[in-house]
Length: 156
Image (cartoon, rainbow, N blue to C red; front, side, top):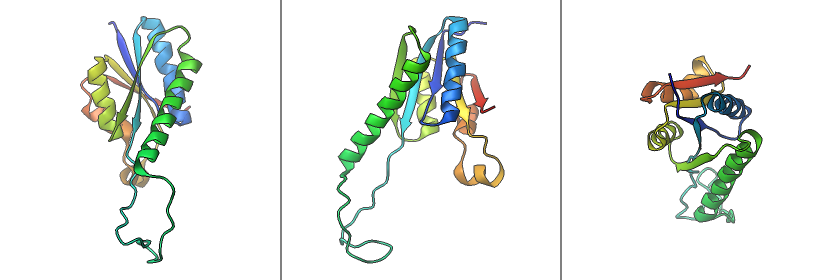
């Protein structure tokens, strides 16, 4: 068995950092290329046509953050997460990185196909039961819909 390309999904959590460490170690053992993906889910800003708070009905003060500014902030945070992960784990390994916008699970799968990954590595928060039902599970969605093997790394 050979693995030539590994896609590692990361976010700003200890779970993702733990998975990244695993992914880079596997990449070293197989001399595989590494792709890092961080997904930016769109932040929803309420559309205010009346200038009133939709909950309290009171006039709203401007938040000072326009939609494009918010997108720039998210993009900068994403780049920071990727840069920090590369500095911590890559050493001299070349890394391809992706910043995708939209659904986290679908974005990971899309980037895996684009990168032609033969393995996807993702961390898990270990949610179960009602919490998983209400919150969803990115790892579970990726496992169910990926066309390549997925290594789900739990926090231990």
